[in-house]
Image (cartoon, rainbow, N blue to C red; front, side):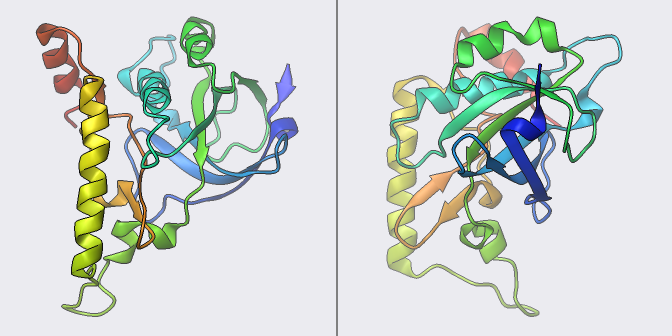
Length: 214
């Protein structure tokens, strides 16, 4: 079995300005490539003692599948690795790890064997200084930073292209939040697809939407 420390150096949390329901996200380095990555791991409260698997667990597989299907879009963050870790520590720094790289099918098929572990994804590590939620927090009372008109239009057009690509594959993006949008003045990048859905039959769609209401 491989130890987490052989594959990743885990550093500080990078999600403290916009905490999510499903996961915690940490700055990390992939020791195999030297690349800086965002290490996204399921929150410990979503683990069940009896081995039952909640939607929050399956959401990692859902997100990995959608990231892979949208990999040709320049506006979606890149999936770099997926797998499971044995550590139940909120900030994991040791313990066993099973890495599947970008083999999302193997990641999904292995789920029954790792119901007491936590799923993780690693994606491109984007600077928080480019996050719209971070940028648009008021800097002083009654003051809010705004995008120039030409940048706002460019961002909207790029978002439309992304949605067009997603809709052609029957993918519905369901988590429109500023904290999921990164903008450097020229290029839009979106993170966090765990609430988004690949549409199937009408009945199953309705059930998926109900499960994601918090």
